[in-house]
Length: 198
Image 1 (cartoon, rainbow, N blue to C red):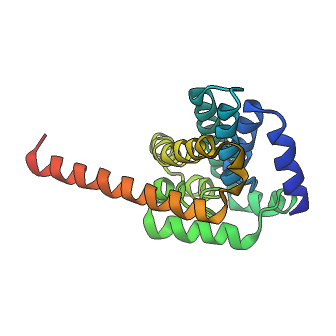
Image 2 (cartoon, one colour; image 1 turned 45 degrees about the vertical axis):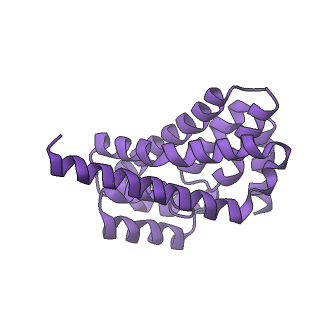
């Protein structure tokens, strides 16, 4: 973990480019913590080193590019490829198993909800690629799942300013609660629209 801490610290020194690279790595099976990268992106906005739009786009696009990269690796190389070389980039068997069980339980929707869960989001591209999930659906669900996570953590980093490092576990719980409320609200709107036929 000391190596990962060093990698994360190095990425933070690169500014917005580091945010993009960090989120790419996190979505491509390398457990760089987005809970640190994204609040730092917000901190860059606080320092006027980036606009809020630039910081959020860097995080979102980095995550999407990484997710697509991870998807195609899994689709063409399969689980054996990831298992064989994963140990070199801090991927453990239990993490792969956990993401696979989540996907088997929830199907395509697992990609959307998986992007909102720490510990699952980094590896959810693997079972989706192995199962040959439609790329269009994978990309759409990845985008919809990554969007609230990215926007919320980046904005929280901006609001916290110089105290962005203290987001920690409490911030993750708070962000998770807000995301769950957003999902529930969207589901209610969808249900009401379906009932009215609009």
